[in-house]
Every structure is written in structure tokens, then in C-alpha cells.
Amino acid sequence: EAQDEQFAGDWAERPWSDIFATAYLAAASCTDHLLGLADVLRSGNALFSAYTLTRGAVEAAAIGCYLTDPDIEDKERVRRTMNYRLDALCERTWLFSDMQGEYAAGKLLETRQRISDFARSSAQHGFDFHKVDGKGRAAHIGLAQPGAMTLISLAVDKDMPELGRMYQ
Image (cartoon, rainbow, N blue to C red; front, side, top):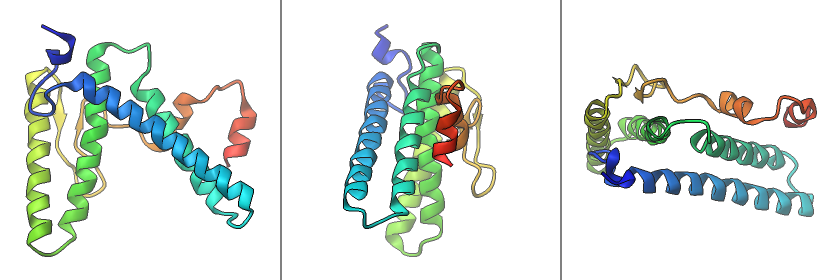
């Protein structure tokens, strides 16, 4: 069985392509935030946006590091990527559940169906699936997706304390 298809299922036909695309998107997001930061710093017009652009860049870099960790097995890489996607689907559910109208209702139904697809594929590949546990507590596969600050902590070099001072 080809590596591309080993973890295929309702969640994705080609999970390895999704892993690459997700990591690429994180790198592109980090780059975009850094380019925006350079523009802000050059202009000198918007002091506080420098902090939000820096945080966006750091968070994107941290998720990229987490998803592409060279020390994890293939199955864990798939789990992390699918958890990242599942987290976004849960956020989308919360967004559309607060909206009115047919369009929002249709998107809510579509998103809930995708979450069900993830639940089926999780079971198919031997993962434990945990349903949404209230608003703000996303469904997850195995361990929950770490929060932004945990991901940043995992990604930074602990021998460079000046990084933490600059980030705060």
C-alpha cells in the first residue's frame, strides 16, 4: 500500500498531500506575517500591529514545527495534521451555530458531516475520537491539539531566554 493511501479515508483521500499542504500553508502564513511586520516597522505608523503580526508569525512557525517534527512516526504525523484540521472544523461549527438563515444552517450541517467523516476515519485507523465537549472544547483525535503558547514553547530553543523576553 502506497504511503499516500495508508491513512486514506473519509477525512482525506491523500493524507500525505494534506500534511504537505498544511505545513506549506503554515510556512506561507509565517512569511506573510513577517513581510507585513517589515512594512509596519518601515512605516512607523502602527505601533501595536507589530505585536499582533509577530504573534501570528510565531504561531504559524510553531504549528509548522509541531506538524513536521522529525522525531514522530507517520501515524502521529497524520493524527496531528487531522487534529489541526478538526480543530478548524469545530471553530467553523461554533461560528455557524451563532448565525441565522439557510446559508448558515447549510454550512453548519456540512461542517458537522465533515466532523463525522473524521470520527469514522479515526476509528478506521485505530485512533480514539473525542467528540466536541461544549463550546470552546474541540473534538480531537487522541490527545487534544495543544494551545498556541504550548506549541510556541515546544518550538523555541530553551537556551535562548532572550527570545521569551522579546516575545512578551
